[in-house]
Length: 94
Image 1 (cartoon, rainbow, N blue to C red):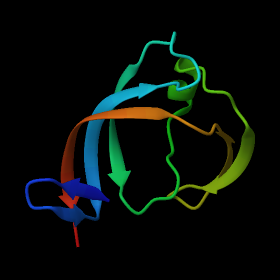
Image 2 (image 1 turned 90 degrees about the vertical axis):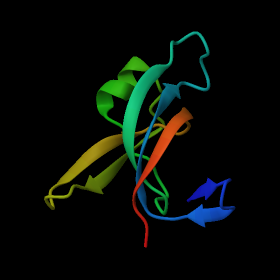
Image 3 (image 1 turned 60 degrees about the vertical axis):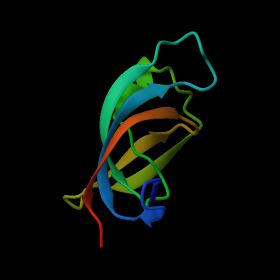
Image 4 (image 1 turned 60 degrees about the horizontal axis):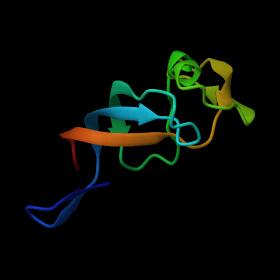
Protein backbone atom coordinates (compact mmCIF):
# COMPACT_ATOMS: atom_id res chain seq x y z
CA UNK A 1 0.00 0.00 0.00
CA UNK A 2 1.22 3.48 -0.84
CA UNK A 3 -0.07 6.73 0.56
CA UNK A 4 -0.72 9.59 -1.85
CA UNK A 5 -0.16 12.75 0.19
CA UNK A 6 -1.78 14.97 -2.48
CA UNK A 7 -5.11 13.11 -2.53
CA UNK A 8 -4.74 11.65 0.99
CA UNK A 9 -5.65 8.19 -0.33
CA UNK A 10 -4.13 4.76 0.14
CA UNK A 11 -3.21 3.06 -3.13
CA UNK A 12 -3.15 -0.72 -3.42
CA UNK A 13 -1.74 -2.73 -6.34
CA UNK A 14 1.46 -3.29 -8.25
CA UNK A 15 4.11 -0.69 -8.71
CA UNK A 16 7.67 -0.06 -9.72
CA UNK A 17 10.04 1.67 -7.36
CA UNK A 18 13.63 2.82 -7.41
CA UNK A 19 15.81 3.40 -4.41
CA UNK A 20 18.77 2.28 -2.34
CA UNK A 21 19.07 -1.09 -0.61
CA UNK A 22 21.20 -1.26 2.52
CA UNK A 23 22.23 -3.74 5.17
CA UNK A 24 20.71 -2.28 8.38
CA UNK A 25 23.15 -4.25 10.54
CA UNK A 26 26.30 -3.02 8.80
CA UNK A 27 26.40 0.69 7.87
CA UNK A 28 29.93 0.30 6.44
CA UNK A 29 28.58 -1.59 3.43
CA UNK A 30 27.73 0.82 0.62
CA UNK A 31 24.07 1.07 -0.46
CA UNK A 32 23.15 -0.42 -3.83
CA UNK A 33 20.73 1.30 -6.21
CA UNK A 34 17.93 -1.02 -7.33
CA UNK A 35 14.68 -0.89 -9.27
CA UNK A 36 12.03 -3.34 -8.10
CA UNK A 37 8.52 -4.56 -8.79
CA UNK A 38 6.40 -4.04 -5.69
CA UNK A 39 3.16 -5.76 -4.69
CA UNK A 40 1.55 -3.70 -1.96
CA UNK A 41 -0.22 -6.78 -0.55
CA UNK A 42 2.87 -8.98 -0.29
CA UNK A 43 4.01 -10.25 3.09
CA UNK A 44 7.61 -10.97 2.06
CA UNK A 45 10.19 -9.39 -0.20
CA UNK A 46 12.23 -11.51 -2.59
CA UNK A 47 15.64 -10.25 -3.69
CA UNK A 48 18.18 -11.75 -6.10
CA UNK A 49 20.94 -13.84 -4.53
CA UNK A 50 23.63 -11.49 -5.90
CA UNK A 51 22.06 -8.58 -3.96
CA UNK A 52 22.10 -10.64 -0.74
CA UNK A 53 25.78 -11.42 -1.32
CA UNK A 54 26.74 -7.82 -2.20
CA UNK A 55 24.99 -6.45 0.90
CA UNK A 56 26.41 -9.27 3.06
CA UNK A 57 22.96 -10.05 4.49
CA UNK A 58 23.19 -12.88 6.99
CA UNK A 59 21.26 -16.04 6.12
CA UNK A 60 19.02 -16.95 9.08
CA UNK A 61 17.09 -19.83 7.48
CA UNK A 62 16.35 -21.62 4.22
CA UNK A 63 12.84 -21.93 2.80
CA UNK A 64 11.29 -23.77 -0.11
CA UNK A 65 9.49 -21.48 -2.59
CA UNK A 66 7.43 -22.17 -5.68
CA UNK A 67 8.47 -20.23 -8.79
CA UNK A 68 6.13 -18.85 -11.47
CA UNK A 69 6.77 -21.90 -13.69
CA UNK A 70 5.65 -24.25 -10.89
CA UNK A 71 9.13 -25.52 -10.03
CA UNK A 72 10.34 -25.47 -6.42
CA UNK A 73 13.64 -24.17 -5.09
CA UNK A 74 15.21 -23.78 -1.65
CA UNK A 75 16.39 -20.21 -1.06
CA UNK A 76 18.08 -18.20 1.68
CA UNK A 77 15.88 -16.31 4.14
CA UNK A 78 17.73 -13.25 5.41
CA UNK A 79 15.51 -11.09 7.59
CA UNK A 80 15.76 -7.30 7.48
CA UNK A 81 16.73 -5.17 4.49
CA UNK A 82 16.69 -1.37 4.54
CA UNK A 83 15.19 0.13 1.39
CA UNK A 84 15.09 3.90 0.86
CA UNK A 85 12.50 4.81 -1.76
CA UNK A 86 13.36 7.50 -4.27
CA UNK A 87 10.56 7.07 -6.84
CA UNK A 88 7.35 5.02 -7.06
CA UNK A 89 5.20 4.42 -10.13
CA UNK A 90 1.84 2.66 -9.81
CA UNK A 91 1.49 0.06 -12.57
CA UNK A 92 -1.90 -1.29 -11.61
CA UNK A 93 -4.43 -0.47 -8.94
CA UNK A 94 -7.87 -2.09 -8.62
